[in-house]
Image 1 (cartoon, rainbow, N blue to C red):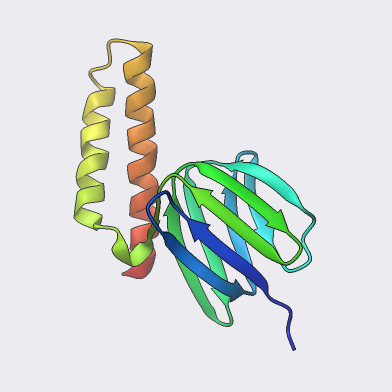
Image 2 (cartoon, rainbow, N blue to C red):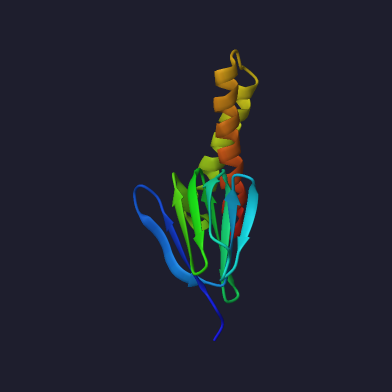
Length: 135
């Protein structure tokens, strides 16, 4: 029997995923982590990005926006501030958020405003990228 790794993805509001998977790609602080069964233990911050996981031939995509990750040889736990399945993302709303963030970037008058606009833009772009995978 093929080895699997148990993946749990949890937000403050709910558990989104709890299943055995073949592999997962997770946006860690220092870059994307490919995790297979038997992976060395580690803990990392999550950056904004696309999380994907594969069960057999089926690949699932999610947008994750901050949080933490724990990897053990037989399980991966993602504690995300926000996580959305690709099919649950409203593409029109994400596009509107991107447009708002781009407009804000053109009218920046402080470093704090710049950081906020960049975070909003990054979040919108990730959501658009992930949403496009379910269409």
